[in-house]
Length: 220
Image 1 (cartoon, rainbow, N blue to C red):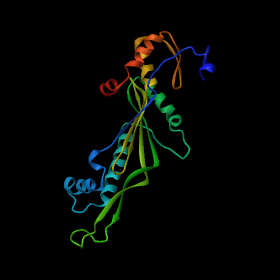
Image 2 (image 1 turned 120 degrees about the vertical axis):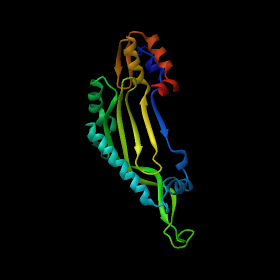
Image 3 (image 1 turned 180 degrees about the horizontal axis):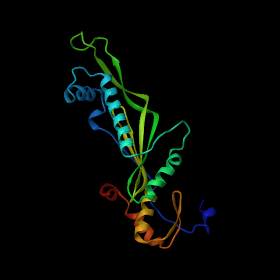
Image 4 (image 1 turned 45 degrees about the vertical axis):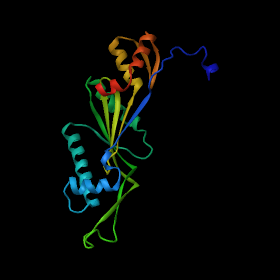
C-alpha cells in the first residue's frame, strides 16, 4: 500500500473518523430491575409487557408530535436503504440554514436485544394473579433515527430504540468536526465525502484534529 501511495499523497492528516457512542439505562439491564421499575418505580401491582407497550406507544406519539410541531420530515427506511444517502438532502437543507437542528427523523424496523415476557406457570406469589418472567431476546422493533446538523460537528444522528430497555446510539464524524473548525479558523480546504483532499495549512489542520477528544464532545 505504501508503494502504491508514494508520490501520490498530497495531504496526510491523522484524525478520528466515525465515532459511535452507546447509551443505556444501567438499572434496566436484568429482569429483576425491570420488575422493580414497573412495580416500585411506576407503581403497577403486576409487572406486565402491556406496560412496555404503553410506554413505547407514548414515546412514538411524542416523536410524531415533535415532528409535526417543528415541521421535521419523517422518513420511513426500507430494506436496502443507505440511510446516510436517504438523509443527505435533509441534512443539506438544515446546513443551509446555518443553525443546529433536527434535519429529519428516520423510522426503521430493526432487530434489537430487548426484554421479552413469558407468563409464569405458578402465577406469582399469590398463585392467583397473572405474573410474568422477563428475559433478553432479539426482537424486531421500532427504532427512531434523529438526524441532526450541528454547527460544530456537522451531520450526526441519535438512534433510540422504542422498546425496553431503550438502548441509544449516537453517531458523529471526526472529519466533519474538523471541517467545521477549519472553516472557523479560516483554513481553506478541498473536502472529500469523508476527509480532506487538500488544504492551505496542513499543520494547522492537524492541530485541529489533535484537539478532538472527550472534552470537545462533552462541552459542545
